[in-house]
Length: 177
Image 1 (cartoon, rainbow, N blue to C red):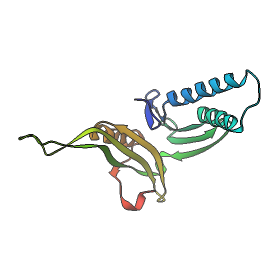
Image 2: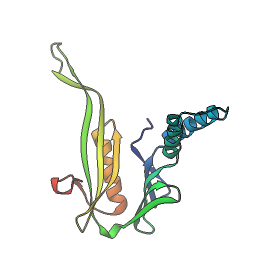
Image 3: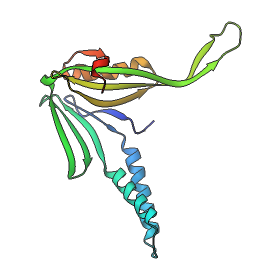
Image 4: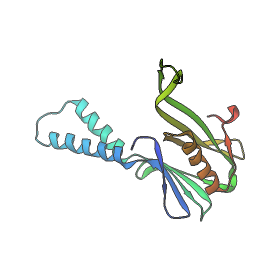
């Protein structure tokens, strides 16, 4: 399911990209187009409609992504609007380790039948927060990966650690940001 949480995209053997799906951005763009088309018929427009149009356009063009490049040995973070974005570059050598923290969310169902477990999770979603912890103690959030299985989310963290050639560790209280 496409959502606002980041997804991991492989761009060749030497490049990983972590970004939100383009589907929500396309939907915001389509919504802005419909609002603009409705406004093109003429007349006066309430300020609220102009604010909604501005928010939809900004949501459609906003970027927030990490690009991990093994060839250059860097991770680049791009966030903001086109031509008004900020770029942060982190060298792989400066990364101490990749860290993950896993949490689950779901509905707890009670079973009363004989022989069945007393509690069972239904509609379970696993959220794994990925962070790069730097040698100087700073940490940068890569994003939150969602899966249906705990092992798959830890697998995503392992994939980053192997890609950057850095150790993987579970979250510790000192590095939470």
